Length: 511
Image (cartoon, rainbow, N blue to C red):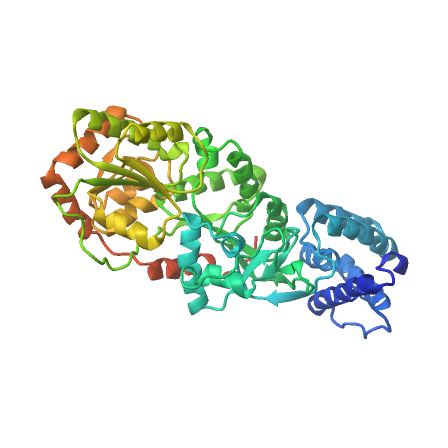
């Protein structure tokens, strides 16, 4: 048996020592009595593994097997890997099972492991996977929600923030730069960790963080490569997985998004089906996820509990003065550049109104997305002298200033999980023109907005004309926007924590 363990040499010795540490960490949770240390790492690893395999075979508990496989391969196992290992342990004696597990672990290490990494098993913790926000400077939509919510959780609760190893095999804690990107966005300017290099690219390997009988919160949508391991963690490990549900656009409206996104989202749903709770960001998003959950009994699964925890809108106290009525009116449209945001229809309506002789400036503000017909139309109109422009990667302060200057905002999206630009506009007292269904209609119902069918070009142009020419309507909508009920990020963070991090009722088993 020992011949398959790491052989002599400095790097191999480091790997053997890391394996001993990981197996020892698992043994602390799984063995009634941990055997005494052996003279060298290889012997100690062999001894620990033998005892662990005997214990896991005797218990038949898949949770125990999940922890053993994680320790052995330095990567979270997938559901298929767990099934294969469980069947092998049921049929083989301990010696054959150990030999088979070593071979399987070797393959898992090559695929997703970090063999020189040690691990910490955290019991009864709340763990938040914030990998994207920790390793990227992108700051729209989901990232804005995470960077407003997670710092409040970190302030008020015991919380472990984690990212993934470079090989996408396991969780690790954040370094100082990554914590700044999540917890202190805009307050400090630190070096972004290179996602290709990762914290572990230096001489010190990452220290893996393994949740055990804990709650793992997904405030972001995980990368597809990680979903099989997260799904197995949710289903088999004894941990609870909960998530924020932003929308189901990739499967409800696939024709409106990039062709690669539906496939990515299907991987995400393989995790959601085993989650305990999903918190929808609006009534519309909540109903989408409830529809998915209601289908799960056809697979013999209960599906997640789906609750609504609606996003708030909290903006800085306005500074400076709004636009003078003597200035040329400014209309802004905020959102990533993609077909479902419907900017091409807004541009078409604007050109009709310019041809009628109306004077106004149109600014599109966004980022991300991909090149579409909108780009060509936008460039053509700008070249012809129309007062239209695009701004990307602007600061929050610049965005708040544009909201204040605008006569109104237009957000005629075809499908949204929430519609943050609408809510932000109204929070500044700036009227919004938005879609008359879904989550944006929910936001508009509390006052300050005019709604329209975004698929009706005539209706969109008519509504923009009214807002450009009817000062009384603008005043009425401004008053409605300023009288909207206030809901803060503190409110949202508190309600979301209660939904996603609450302990299981006594006697209930994690899913």
